[in-house]
Amino acid sequence: TQLLEQSPQFLSIQEGENLTVYCNSSSVFSSLQWYRQEPGEGPVLLVTVVTGGEVKKLKRLTFQFGDARKDSSLHITAAQPGDTGLYLCAGPSGGSYIPTFGRGTSLIVHP
Amino acid sequence: SAVISQKPSRDICQRGTSLTIQCQVDSQVTMMFWYRQQPGQSLTLIATANQGSEATYESGFVIDKFPISRPNLTFSTLTVSNMSPEDSSIYLCSGVDSSEAFFGQGTRLTVV
Image (cartoon, rainbow over all chains, first blue to last red; front, side):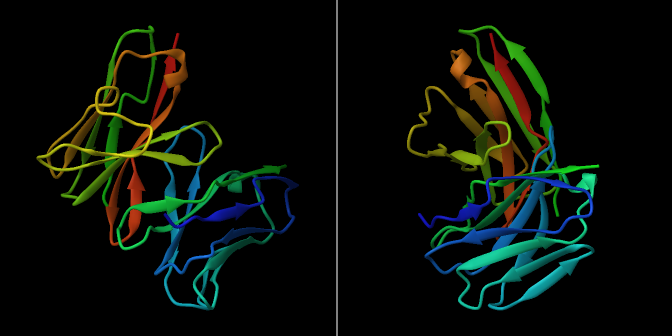
């Protein structure tokens, strides 16, 4: 099973601050997905990155896939309370389509 | 992406009883999974729900405790059997399409 190490595990910041969440592995992934989960809901897909070095932007969120496709980052600019949630990275495990999930980053943005 | 309707959204159950969780997808999905999640933590895969055959369970999970049905490509159920307080958790069903997962809303189970 390919493992995804996610850091930090917890993050508590003030509104307006910037932050970066990291997702690292020793294995190459054909793609990585980022999800956000709010309390009482299932995870919701934010983005999929496929190409090494790829950068995708979703409003104030910037996602990057490492050149070697072993790591990814999520950067949030000017965080808002609505960004509060659990952020999960995931990728297909081995040759299957079964997603492997990182341990998650729990983000709280205080107004 | 497809939409999964999961129910119940929450339940409080007596120990020793069983609860069946249902997931209905609005389109046919090849792969469906069941996960368990402690609040604020990552997902632990329970099993892959196979259409028309027995589910494939991960280490630490057995069919007698978590029987799963998948009669067709749009529906699956997970039963938590003979519940104990240690089974209190969030249970999520998921489908996968082109490596991207989509989830039901989750079932928050409390066993008392």
